[in-house]
Image (cartoon, rainbow, N blue to C red; front, side, top):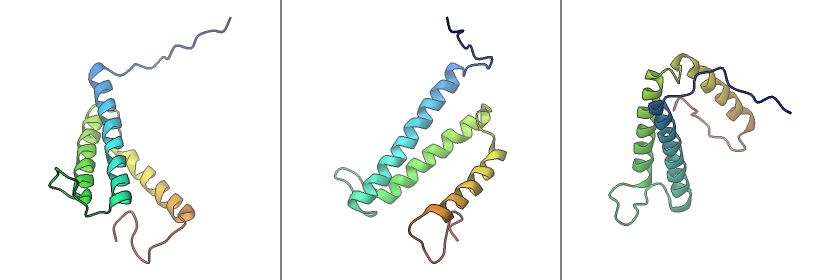
Length: 109
């Protein structure tokens, strides 16, 4: 018989679990908006909407940032560790992107 693994770590509280679910939803909504820009263009305004796809993606990223800050308040995100991921991604993009832009990058410079 296999010995069952029981985590020694504390599991998330109900509040933390809900925040994590909302984080997943926000990530999905950002992804959906990016897909709409690819399919219909940045400035397309969907029927029944007043904002174009860029504005709607910005709003979704704002929603994500709000939830990210709430997760930080719960100690589920350490903001001091984020720059490591940022720099790691910059290196990955420089190495693996198949297209390039004369200027710019993650900093928007």
